[in-house]
Amino acid sequence: MHPILLTEPGTILEPSELILNPDGSVYHLALRPEQLGDLIFVVGDPGRVARISAHFDQIEHQVHNREFVTHTGLYRGVKITALATGIGTDNIDIVMGELDALVNIDLEKRTPKKEHKVLTIVRMGTCGALQEDVPCDELVVSHSALGLDNVLHYYAHEQTDAELRILQAFLQHTEWPDNLPMPYIATGNDYLVNELGRGNHVGITATAGGFYGPQGRQLRAVPSVGGLNELFTSFKHEDLRLLNFEMETSAIYGLSGLLGHKACTVCTVVANRLRKEYSKDHHAAVDRMIGQVLERLAG
Image (cartoon, rainbow, N blue to C red; front, side, top):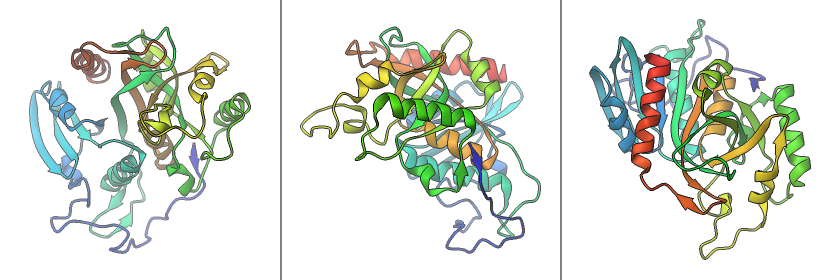
């Protein structure tokens, strides 16, 4: 995914658009530029931040504002930030915008910088598998994300030819219902996907706009369209299958593409939707994921 247009350096961003706290930190994350690492791990669960920073040799900054919890420290000489985003692509819109602002906007002058800084952003999450041969406690790395949310539709973007081919194949396969939002495809960083994908499941991730109905779950309220999960499971484009459901990756990949950052998602499978199974010890499986990602990217 690429931007059609970005705000020009020298453009003054008004106080209502770029909102800063009295200490100069960005509004929601409450971070200042010096508190951010070049390698950023984003997680949904605030408790997972401490599970990551427990591996650090030294914690330099701890910030907590609303649901956003941040620990920045050193791991084998690498400055790393672990950041809890909360759940959903709406929160990712906030997180990605403010992370980019920390490195690519002069916050004092309130204008985009001429020199662009690239962040490496890796989501370590949990997911539900859509394929029977992807069992609980194993890892799925997202080659690309199928956005079932609306966030990227509000940004001036264009998809690559490869992304459009996946999307058109998906729309044709599912005969996508008119009453649901139009999906989009966003792709992760090739190097990160290859590095984290070794020995793990690699495929397309469906990013849903909710946990129950949008992922085909039925409690009391009944989903408006039945049978979508079966169509997701049977979809395949070239050598890529639709492997899992989660709730953040499409916005991470899409906004990273627009803002020029490197992104990848790796998720621990905590549920297999076809087998109707749930992990017996997902905390241990998540800890194994954290160790593997740290070793491969900062080891």
